Image (spheres, rainbow, N blue to C red):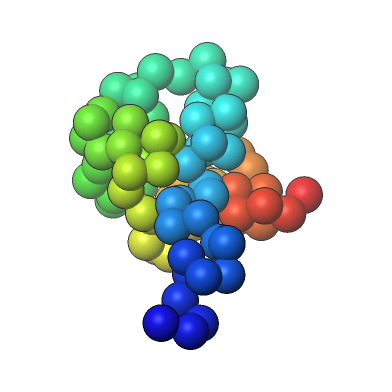
Length: 83
């Protein structure tokens, strides 16, 4: 099918995941600690969900991305590829 992601050589994975992992590690947080911080911000993602996000197995909704950026003290742009 013309125009699909596979034909355009675009990976069908969440690009924010590895950047979330890097920011989390830079702060010295475990996945459980990040989950707790997200919960305080009103976002419910358990440790397994964070692991899936970091490994590109689960996509991140826009409102979740904003919460990740807030609790990790980075910009949304940093999490999606900009600097």
